[in-house]
Image 1 (cartoon, rainbow, N blue to C red):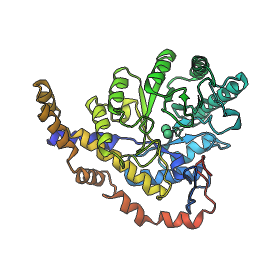
Image 2: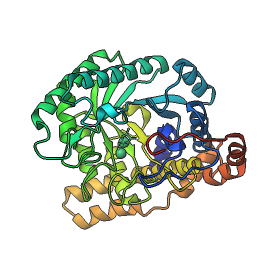
Image 3: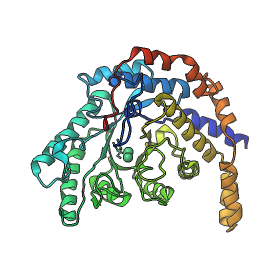
Image 4: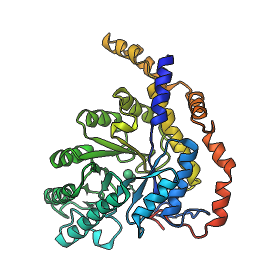
Length: 389
Ligand code: LRH
Ligand code: MN
Ligand code: MN
């Protein structure tokens, strides 16, 4: 057991959970965006807030950007700003869903001129990767149709493949293309990348630098996400996660809040293959919005939820589990897994934080720091996260 705890601490100490810049801006639903005081006015302030999350958790060393929400004149300066605050620029997320031209799609649009415009944006995102030192380009397409007959399903796949190949060819050494799928929304009849199978098929054709991203909120209710994790891992095509929680659709709630057991089951698949640490090449990202709660503590809580699920997964008695599985002892195998899930890992994480020179309780430490009060006074007119202002 002690060896297991020591190993768990080692892995947890190296774990990186990437924060989305857009989690720090005002967000909401299509019904209302509730503005909060003190939210960032520009990408530099978003990174400053993300650095706070890292300062109190020690586990959130990178920030994902969304372009053009995080458009700046000088990306090298933004990267230097991040570095000065102890974090770095992570994934570059493209955005081909907020322009009038994209009403019928972007990279799958029937008009080649619109596809060219979308392609130019994606290539610009790779330029930004070059300027910031980012290694990952995350592509999510809102493309799809609302009505049967609206467009050819097959032709749209051909158009998608062509654009993806163009972008793939532009990637430099050490850069990856991460393709994210989503079952529905904003399209309601067909979505051009609706599931892991479609994303996998495109990535396989593209080559080794193309991998799939699993956004935990992008499946039909009841989907066994850990099974998808296992399959993609096995095929070397799991590029990363967009973690969040959902009760109904793509709710973007705090990870681990709706179904902590699902998060544990996912982390168990990953821990059992030893791919939790930063060397695994799997990007562990959050993709969330804090519509009604404070944003920085919302992110801190989310990081802690991932850490707790990870710690539990690392505490699984793997020898006992293997023995029970090999002997066909269904109840014992299940009991071994549940023992780990039911372990209170908060003391272990508090101890680890102490060893790393951090406060035992990041939520309380942040609340006591005075940062929230300071930004509320200093910043007037905070920026919307990007999509519902
Ligand atoms: C789409 C999505 C995708 C976008 C983000 C804002 O639902 O998950 O990752 O980039 O939301
Ligand atoms: Mn996402
Ligand atoms: Mn989403």
